[in-house]
Amino acid sequence: KGMSPGVALLVKDGDSDEVITVHLGPSPFVNPNSISLRKGEKVKVKGVWAEIDGKEIFMASKLKKGDYYEYKVRLTKDGTPFWTMSPEELAKERASK
Image 1 (spheres, helix red, strand yellow):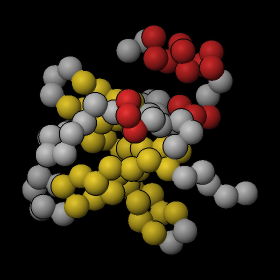
Image 2: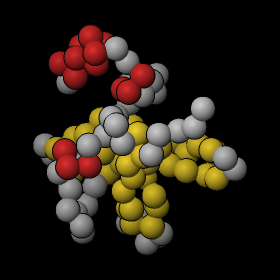
Image 3: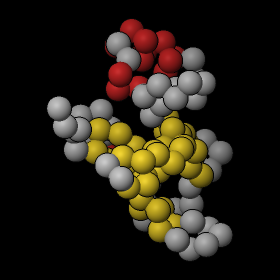
Image 4: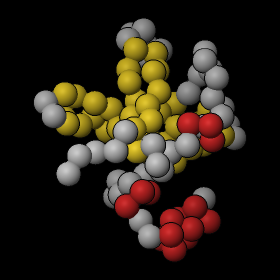
């Protein structure tokens, strides 16, 4: 069983100028048009490094832009991806923001 195609962003590290591919999640779950970001905007990204198929990748749990915009793709307490949750669990998590 393979993985679904995913959605990712290219983010330049503010300290090192290294460009990092930040994986958000599978495309059936993450709608790129719902992410209110434009090229050149500053963001803060929380997540973890992981190894998949021998490659080090960065998997985001949350993107934050400014004081008001936040895009969460995983539960912050235990790292459970939203796309593995039932519709009821997802609605409850999103309502608790």
